[in-house]
Length: 122
Image (cartoon, rainbow, N blue to C red; front, side, top):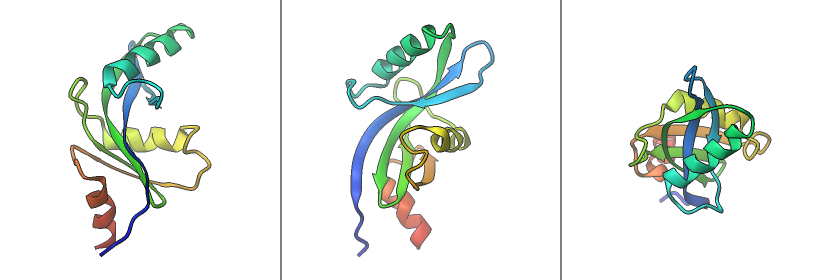
């Protein structure tokens, strides 16, 4: 049996993109907001509106920190699936994770983050 250290479980995130170009801008989450993707998107819209940028949501999901991995998984019931490659690229630039030494994993639609980590070790 493998023992894992789960530090943060089921934190929701969304992928924010510039509306006019569809360019992904950021991976957005806020632990202080209600656990709903729509609340995250409303906050992201306000943040980007202050900079003069209209944004859209390109999917969402959940993430967990397991051992030295940040694992992105699931999908948003409100905004649908995110793109694994986009999330992995944005995660590496996110201020929360940037210099923490984490490895990033992503499997859209998978509901068990431990299964994603364990698949690397099998």
